Amino acid sequence: MTPVSLLSPEARRRRIRQAFDDRVTREWKRHEGEPWRVLRRTLRERFLVRHLGRRGGTLLELGPGPGRFTPLLRAKPRQAVVAVDISRDSLLAARRRARSTPDLAPVHWVQGVGEHLPIRSSSVDGVVALGNIVSFASGDGPRLLEELGRVTKPRAALLVDFQTPVGATQEFFHQAARHRMLPRVLRDREYYLVDEALASGILPFDPRRLTQWEFKFYTAEQATRDLGKAGFEVVDLMSVGPVARMDDRLISVARRDRRTWQSLLEVEERVGRRPGVRETGDGFLVCAVRRRP
Image 1 (spheres, rainbow, N blue to C red):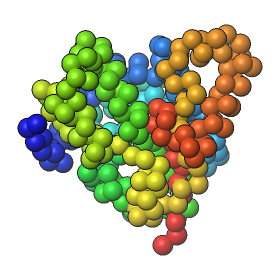
Image 2: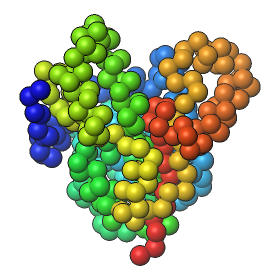
Image 3: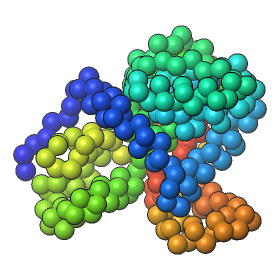
């Protein structure tokens, strides 16, 4: 197999920026449509509500994309939301949507990257970073978490999600099947970087091999360790959809009745917090609190 070197941080960020500038509409639809998409969006929303509570002050949203979760963050009694995204087009789309709700908390839109935030130290009261931001940072993930630790106040909450080896490999095979290349990929795992990714924890970028991102996978133990090094203490960790992930029939039946749907969500949340299943769903959500210096 030809060795694939990791991209430089600048090259990786440039590629991510270009890709998300080109897929604003697609990114918005990532959490709607098929029932399993609705399930994972709803579980994320409930996790945000659970841990943000009635926290006031200023909230940082890193990687809002086209603004899927931004209205939920603005609805709390807070001073403002600072939305930082690498994609200018995504920020423009989110800003247009925000204009329809001027009665909610104001938003300051900033184009930037998580590894170098244009924000004063100890100035924000909470951070939300959904969308596998740390995984996209690849080898710079620890640096990104350190930067989030720098800008947050003591006892501020960080809500972040991580992609797992299980979820990332499923997504890779799903893309291969969609491109009618799954038998070819499985016959030659080494050429298509499957073995390398599982051994190293990083899927390297290579346009010849169905790998459009340089992406790092996390176990719950690795995420807890890196968050601890950045000054955060994990207080809640939940797998997203370990029971019904991508099972459209189960989710469709549950959604026909409000109480049944509510029960499914509660089952997912209870199962998702058990240590043995934290890497089996669509990634996992973490709530961590910034320790006092």
